[in-house]
Image 1 (tube, one colour):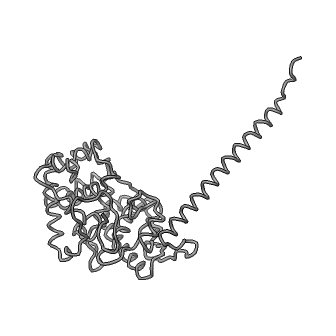
Image 2: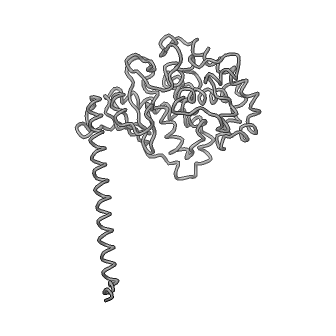
Image 3: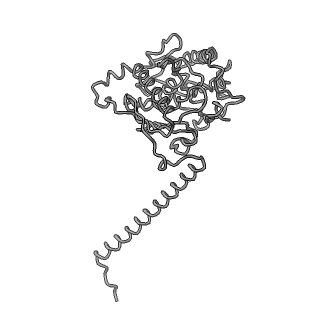
Length: 344
């Protein structure tokens, strides 16, 4: 005897029930994952000796252009706020022409830029949402960093990230990686004195400047590339045969910073105008050679300029306070606050 045909209504009800069961299962699995992630974060925060944000909410410090959520002390937070305002003035002066071109754009009307300042490196690490080796990060719309202890520059991590923030939120531009990181390092390593940021005047107590001696160049470009003291310029501009970032962090940051410094100050500043034009392009090989010059000649001048940068650092009175390290440079940019030296 033939089976009774199943009605369309019954089929629809069965599908709806099955879909509901699957959705409930997915929701429950996601809930369990969220609970486990929260428990893991709580455990890592407790292990680091960090007070949970819920137990001690960040307080807010405001300056003319920044709103800083902080779990650091009042004096440290105020210091970072003053430094951020000095950076803001120097950054706007540097980008005067580019900002003028965007003057009619409503997006250039600045709302307070948001910062999250942690009271210690351990607290920052417990909340880090960037790469494991990061000492600061910018995740729009907030830049995150901590206050360093000890002598020397205590706010350079935040200034580096604030440059990314200003580029993205005020200038409305995200440059190609080597330009973006080179600019952030250029501002972040510049000496702050008498309420001004002296662009290009290198502060030896900042990242990545303190690693420059460990990447001192020899007489052979091929040998320097083999020993990973420098990435050949053509490789860098094309992205071919470039060492991985995560295992060669300091190499990449020294590379980007020193090249931007050279293009702005090297050879009497003859490449500065070309570099400014290059910032608005993909900054690849074709644009570089068209706006600045042949890779071979530029690389030669850049190599010489790195020696001049090191000499500038050594000539400054604060050179003896720079973070020192011995032997081959490790390939992470961890920072030991107590010794003011990069960790081994």
